[in-house]
Image (cartoon, rainbow, N blue to C red):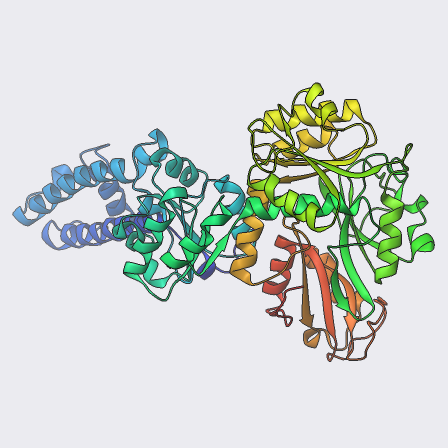
Length: 562
């Protein structure tokens, strides 16, 4: 849904739009001036007294060349005739100018300077050569209200993104002039994802500004030192984080210990728990699970069929790959995690198969080794850490790796089609195994889940979350999560109750914890009146949290951005 600005002054126009507005205002002023002058000249020079609207009609007729003026027989004075000629000529000139500035770009898609589409920039980020589905990152930044300019050396990509409404321009990140066009003097940070050209880009930025933050993304974690020496303030390796995350999820299938909780206080934590393939909860309605009675945990939100329900509908049916947002003390969350796990029909071995030994696979293998769990790696090329040389999309290779008795498999193949095939084959060989998949295309996430995967992470989503976290200095529940938790003062709600505050109804955020300064978190009683001294912990998607902070003009008080 498109949100309308609250005030006219909140509207930001691109350079081209501003030119069109100025042009239309100028044209209106010119027409009105001509009408007044014509009306005055007719009265004083020709002795004809007519209404200003008749004079306005004559100006419009003449300038648009739809007529020569019904008053032509009345003109005798030389000054009058000169003015008429001037009006006619200016009308023709303005017609051509209107055609080029407004009509052609609007209706024929003529070439437009992308720089003219940019709105004025201040405290923004410049993104160079982003290679991981730019729309995912740009949507993330827009939801977090972080202004940006994307700089792409691919002219067609820049044009396509600009046509879709993104702030993108064409230019080389190794050219200082490109950064000046992107208003680097007022930028807060530069993000570079230019691959082998990262160093060149960083040096170009440093030649212009020494004080701007530079964030570099790389698929090679070994390049961190080089990029840091070149001038990067921070280096992000999404593939390494993704592999680490997938391995952690795989390890969790052998243990009830939770690794992704965020503490809200001494006695309360919150986490996201996916409902695994084969879980006893699948097919049940939330109200029938008796989760709170059985575990002490409280389900405060749920991703069902790709839609966030906050709070969840008690009548919603839990499906495979539903993700539940749960709060409670640590023991309650661990008990809940045990409930969501599938009932194993055979004894599982503490062994994890890792398909692919690229950056993702290597990171996953390191985490598995550190946990002391047996790992079997598959890759099409020989290597020191490769146990099985073969194709992970082959049943023979998967059987050789012991897939039918392994506890989990991490699919870290670089090609999405191969990952989907490996997922289907693995599920056909073992209906009990935990399957965790990396995909390169965000759209492949749902396909992987349909193919039988229990947990899927996309490179674009993880990369976007890492960049957003770096820019805002906030932690998130998981690299792929779109849920944010913030802690804010309750000053503005003094004298109100949670029920009358309208926080959820007006912003979509839910208050899940109240801290009144004591050692324990206060229960969220909807009728409890706020004194204004409390701190509230809210949960919601990025857009809802941003709307809350804007609406109430409140800044989070917790530096971690819990």
